[in-house]
Length: 466
Image (tube, rainbow, N blue to C red; front, side, top):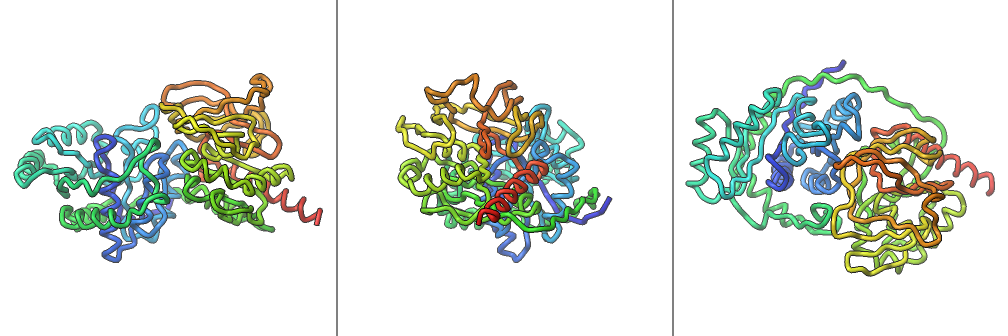
């Protein structure tokens, strides 16, 4: 075991929508302005919130999720990423005690694992002293959670603030800040949550949020709470050494494809991959690479542009025909399908490697943590091996008329989800693997190793042909 003195605090909420992300972005920006190296983390599998936190702090924001990255790996990872920071701020997910089945990867679980104090954000609009009753309930629900204070959000007036502060004082619960209602602090949303920073210009909103936090939150008190967090005992991690020639993996990254965990990409690099970024929206050809990775995102919002970039689609089809390893998640799966139908029932042709059509639906189709067991040998896992990931999508994959469901090369048998189910999904054939599964390679290191090994094998094969 190794000891780490890491100033850290968790910002949790009573529920989703209370303003956690906005407040954490403001805190990060305020401390960053002070010249502090402030490191952000996000509990759970969310891709979008970390983009705002990166903008606010100037550093990558990392996810903490005990389903995607098991606890024995998570703590060493946390210590490694937080080691050079003056202050660590962890944003929670949903409500403090909400998570997967039996509280898996809840904010409370993560806070206890990191032995970190928790500040609870309460949306105080349309309530007075009841806010104190809520805080008391959250504090007593699990005494092992160190609920060290509250942040009052959407306060209406001085009198409103005084009423709630007085009630909190009677309970001995510190009030770290009280932020007034301000519609300028609202972040734009769409069907998968907030609109990603790759599609917005959030700098002016971030400035507004930062200034509101500076005048409404006791930053010194918050920093002091973080500094008082006990020394964190962490198992020593095994450092893997990779030798030999590297492989180049092309990563699709633009407004349509932006759902990647920094830790996941770092895990690929640790296995010997050089990551080369390209845009299916704007690039006319692929870079010189040995494998392709299409992550999730919002291709349904950019169908016209994607469908018009026929030279990119042709390049991806040629790479597939040449045997290049191609891995796709969620939005990446949609792009590799023959076509995608958007929310307006407009259908556009896509790459056509997967004999199916992706159709956007009005309601969320799948959400939650899943186990995906390979039905046959795949690019990332041999037959019978399981991967842990999550799903969150509004689209369905509908097989084309000439595709036989019984003979379709399904990739995985899925188990889990918020409403537990068992079902076949994804597509796996030869050098292609595409499904709705989102992985974090930091928690699926064998899969990362296999993907990079496949890229290296393709590189060696191409070298022999030259």
